[in-house]
Image (cartoon, rainbow, N blue to C red):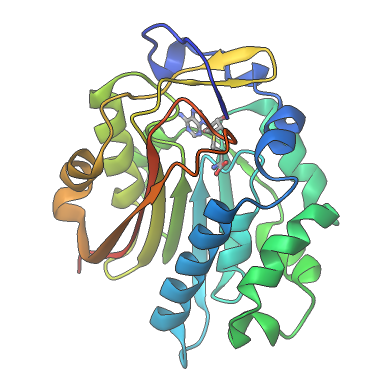
Length: 256
Ligand SMILES: C[S@@+](CC[C@H](N)C(=O)[O-])C[C@H]1O[C@@H](n2cnc3c(N)ncnc32)[C@H](O)[C@@H]1O
């Protein structure tokens, strides 16, 4: 993400269908960045430590999936079905297009996951597993999850709650909605941009919540988590995603 100058904006005031998945991928995920390699490694180890020796659970969810497949790839060995929830029609179209045979540049992320044998020894190829697990990305909003009666056994939310609104109240509500649909004890991973000023995708500016730091993430996750570990990943300074001061990754479990 490059920095933008988004005005104060609530989630509903943004035209999410203007989000350009091609531009976003070119900037962030075509060539794996060191920070993403670290995130993928930590999430892999978190899920692997939790599930090793057990069977697969029924369901995982990646909220605000956008044009990023690595959260879903990290869930592949551990759950039968994966819901990719996304609000933008263009991102949904991109995700639908990836289901049959995802693009080669995602292989570098899978290679990092395969440093753990549970991934390396998957019974089918990751493309086959991705296709059978995801089936159909789901149109919808993070905020509607608060009223959703479904529950998932595993969850991820990467750069969403703080990157879809300037409002700290909406950020907190979004984090709560994500956590509310996880079953007790379900492992999760969530990543946040620290002090982001907003970001530009192609020619369009998108909002972010500037106040986000470790204390704010801890407050938002508050009573929902147990065994949570927080990692602060410094801005590598290579301007891959500028206009922010770092990233915050939390790996934990939904409180029993
Ligand atoms: C900064 S992108 C993050 C995408 C991806 N998770 C990643 O790791 O790169 C924010 C994503 O949230 C989506 N989004 C915006 N509002 C949303 C909402 N209310 N519910 C779910 N997704 C939303 C956007 O369309 C976009 O795909």
